[in-house]
Length: 452
Image (cartoon, rainbow, N blue to C red; front, side, top):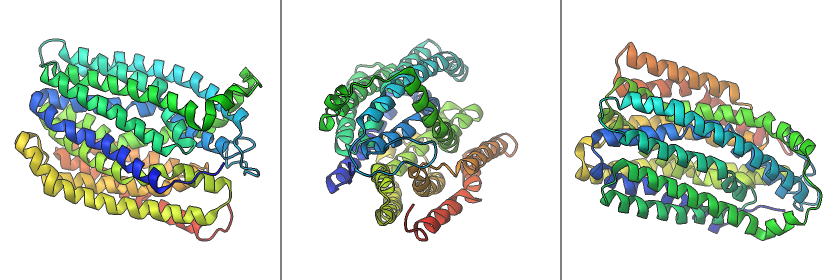
């Protein structure tokens, strides 16, 4: 079945991303007002640690979404490399059922492992960085946050599946509804004096609402639930094993990519918290979270267009791939520049009215944005290769990520360079290779090949 991302899908994608990322902007003044400097810093440490969920996912969400698109596009079979090109184009529900069954089993395992890790190692780390804070508030709030991470992982694949079948509008409506519940509950709980525990509880509620909506609407979309129920062929253990091995071939590669992304973006906050006080870590982290939000909003079309790009590849439509890639890159660059300027001119002055001491300086923020735009530009072009079921860029991503961490530690411990050391460590590690090579390689293939 053809997947075409309509103007409505694109608009809802922007709405969903803006609401999701904008929620962080909207909640920030409340967090800054109701939490003291240490608790605010701790909250953003939670956020950074919480993104470890992408590491435990280990690339399965991306890989399963890609394979659901192949099933929906009528692929006759799944392959470890490349894809079986579609002839008739009708969805392969039997194959889709096998993929769904495999994903349920895998996510039950990885979500349980993630919770055990966060509840043990994560708790010890939180105790270490809050040893000067009296009481059990930090640990209690962290355990609530860990429970939210568990639920997000356990049901997280339904959001990816919705995007995989092209239900972009519904996927983003789910974000809007869940974020509305999140914001309302968090504001109410903060006003009630619950502090960081209330913020974590609201995040838990957001995860529950979002994941349940995803499950309901996936099975409802174009009668998928009914069609899957009509498949009488049972999914045997042998089928589960076969699908797992096929998916695992690229999932572990996508997983390593997720680890690299974490090292390139969020790990700097963890490193910062080791060498600097929580209050200073909070200021730096706010800059990182805002720059990351601008990146995510700017990459909205990139995310929305992935199923269309994959579908075009399955159907050997090279011209659609070229147009899609052009729109992805141009839109990302334009929105990122506008978002950065908008925050410096409007957003930052507004935050200073709430708590001037917690707002990152303009030079530091622009430095953070410099390496964020490099990461986003790199990823836009790498998406071309992932949509063709080839993770060619794995080795260079790993080398750059590890180099960035080593340079960050060196800058903080040896040079005592502070946050500027963290910023330049990322810029140098990505600028040497990834930021120019993969765009060049993608365009070489797109404009010298008539059929994949």
